[in-house]
View 1 (cartoon, protein in one colour):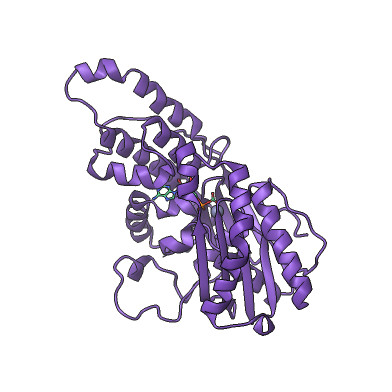
View 2: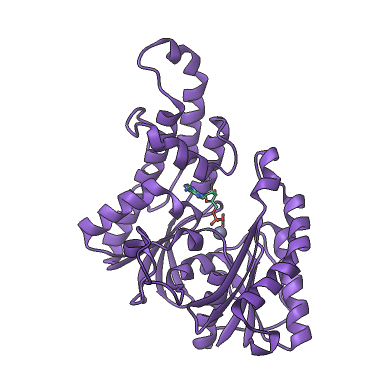
Length: 358
Ligand code: KG4
Ligand code: ZN
């Protein structure tokens, strides 16, 4: 089974060919970060215009890298929710056109479901040689349902009990900002630029994570998250910084970044641990852009060891937005008879993972 995936939900234009559900034959990701950088964030209109410019060559490249033609494909999968509506519409319209032209089934996929399935992705040349961290944290060939999934991206922070394909129970979610959003906003306040996650990750390298005791929101007994208070605490801290700098010892930007990051990681892992206890989970996965965070990965590895979890922590390229995860989710749905190919579906800016599959 060969599925072409198309993902244009935000500022990445991505296309991928996935074989037999999990094997990535090609995955092209064209990111627009540099174009949005001067604005300090993603400008939706620029994002959608660039999607329109890039989509055709990116799809062509994915097919040629995989060594396949339209005729070899069994289906096309496209992200239709949630995301920036202008960007989504480009991918969906393009996918509808090529599905119609080549008489291929078209499967709309929820971006959040795509992230969850990133844990299954594999490459033919994997295991050939050592690539450091991936040895322990790359995708595992023995991965199966059910598993507990912490989805941490720019728009979402959710704890999902993944029972089976299409069977998800959301145990907790953020009540305000997503973790990635908090990284981006705090990075801006610190003058670290955009995108904020990688900038804080880097800036914190030489910082002391215990330099400043930023607050950790505790919403017990619920498994929800809240990051707005932490963000405000950092901003308030920065306002009083001039006074503080007169005193010794001086906090550095690295200290502030590291202390903020530590608070986010602590909050994520505290709830993950509680959710794992509640569900008696043996398998735990962490996916989405923020899963690329090095401090989170480091602390997660020791927690998994302590708790004896089987851990799926995808390689960095599968954490951030990519079309391979979209093709993978569609392939699992097709195998289970849960895909409903059609050409008559819409794109939605807002959606939950459990929203009815159109
Ligand atoms: O999953 P993703 O690529 O796109 C969405 O679906 O939102 O996630 C993007 C988010 C951004 O907020 C970005 O700042 C964050 O992931 N991110 C990171 C790191 N790399 C990306 N956050 C913390 N540490 C990182 N290394
Ligand atoms: Zn995403």
